[in-house]
Length: 267
Image (cartoon, rainbow, N blue to C red; front, side):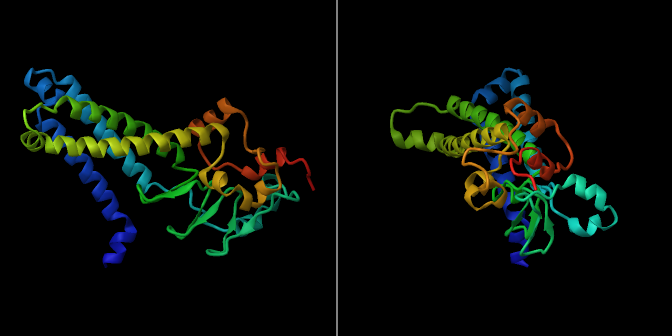
């Protein structure tokens, strides 16, 4: 029973949610800018901060519980009744060939990878994120990036609010007793801000060049990239087009077709 609870991600999600609301409660209960605005009857900033926290939690659960793009059926089996359509969608070039997953035995679309944690193949696999306890893939990658943006804004605002509530004292012991909870909130928000900023920068860059974390880290082991030059990305259409496709293009992409258009050695 306990193993199922851990595997389901319940404890991770519950811990993230609890930590978020504990820090929010600390910021509202201490003598911070938020508390002073409330006492003056200026409720706009406290309300905006509260709504931003709610939005960050909702986005967290959306990314965490969303289907990241699991490969549900065997491409070959699905194609039995529509061979012509599949042949046009997946050109059989010398370098772009579908491979069968060694774990779930499904035919993998290009850019898909089997996740050892989820035990499923994921389309346009980026990575498995232990923070959201879910894979980041074709269907939820853009939402993961939006979540990071909102989370960073929330954390930076929380840092400012926590700093505004720290009061001076003549001795360090009473100062520590008075500001202990705020200092703890400041430390947690500071650490998470640095992590989220790093993640956000990496994923904005990857989105801009149409690459995934898995492809960036394991290029030398990926068959459809090994055949290309060290700097060549067959999926790169330029920064603006890449970002437009990343944030605005919905639905499954036939990456085999995109790859075939840039294949210098077609069969």
